[in-house]
Image 1 (cartoon, rainbow, N blue to C red):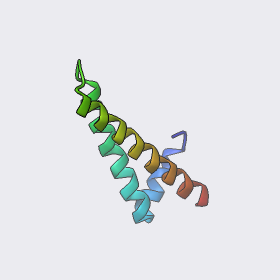
Image 2: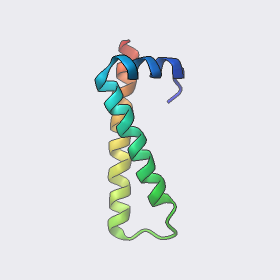
Image 3: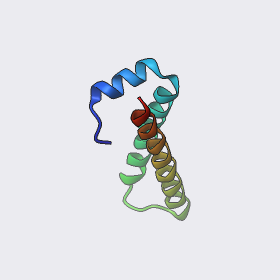
Image 4: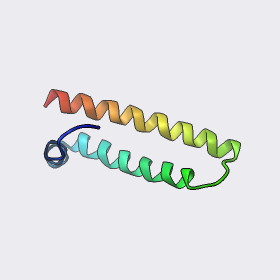
Length: 70
């Protein structure tokens, strides 16, 4: 997300929905990193990774809409 961190900080302070999305995005990023650190992924882990990526992208899209609307 190429957005000024001041804008993100302001939205996190003033918009509960944005704050929730941002926190979820950070959590999903950590989960992806945990999976990416593994040498080999099982089929279940690969499925989980793809699910996390989709959730992260969906949240990012919604955050970008909120940024555009602000």
